[in-house]
Image (cartoon, rainbow, N blue to C red):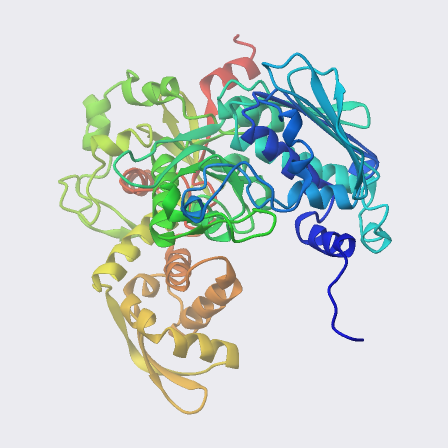
Length: 602
């Protein structure tokens, strides 16, 4: 075939394939045009998964009658005019391909009226063929109706999913745009049924309530943006107790633009490291504010992605902001009433004041290691000893872990140990009910933060083996060991090559040695634990969390009250006391009100 220029009709259909992937793409493009027109309310109607009908109605500025036909020409736009505008994009879309692409693969009927005009204008295009604009009565704003999408492109039509699946995609797009722009009221109707309605008051929590329910909205934690940074992150993130099984609940907006960013999503996920188990993901609505000249929005045909000039700064800003909010406000996991969904509270100011200001008998004596008139609580006189792997302070503040400061008391309530259940759970009383502490998870958190500090300072203690052990490794284990040998040394291992796939183990971390495991079992167990989940996080962190896990006291061990008190005191001093390094809760809370209701006292 000779080289030739494609016809305008065929070229338009090919271009449409880049911009209009499916009905949800049409909805996104039309809604973004409505947002650029200053609409405060946008109604979306869908029939047949969007293949039969998509209608978007807004109350924006409208289109002048003399420009409505021009709006459907390729590369026609009112949003940029010269090269310099590309460095300062403030609109939702500007490529100039959306409307002509839609019109080339569907029947499009557009009715628009500017608020200052007495009459509107109608413009109809059928698969690229148009009639002249004509006067029409219409409310202020614009209505775009798209019918029979892809009817003239059977090859594209046969790859569409079922109407229900396409409607679900549309719902996700509208929900994302509603979260990105909470100041705009959105409504979505699918096949005559109302599927979504947001108030448009500018409060993201209201949108989350409309999308995910009031309980989830109440448990969202606000982000405090850093006003001194050129980049800032605001919005809401969920309490760890209401996480989801996929990433679809993470919404990211940059300067009001809904975007997809694997890098920023990863920053949010990493902020939850240690708060969530593996393969659990947060609900989040994160709003990133950035200098317009620092972002490039013209890197994706459908404008779904952006590129940052200082991506690492954006990554660290988002990660630190989310992490700080979780560290300050994430609540202890609370057991729900029967028939209610288990979810932690929102960490409201009222709940925090309860922990900070609650009147508690002998508060100072509990903190200082005594039970008032009954004398010592068992911590005094057990100077610096270890029992079942729990460091017991001598009450003087000179032990390995000093008592909690007032800052830490704002993180966890002051707890009084009552006893132990099933040789697994420490029972404690707090200002507002009963707390059950998982002794393994709590000790694991304490040890993890200790070994992490030692690893960072290169001060990890090693325990030489009486006799070096020769260990034959599998290819996978040998690869892990050779790739991360320096990290193993920094953690306290002394390992030397000894043949093709064998090593000579001379020392293990002192923390692991106290667990009574052989050096071989400790190293193989560590490599197994790290390799099993290395795709979900960083190698060094997984190594340290595995060391802590293998060193912590196990379920089934009896823990004396003195040891339990010492463990809780060390847990209170942790930076992140509510979860173990793997994201499991260290404790659960049975609120006093719940107990009273269950026993019929209220």
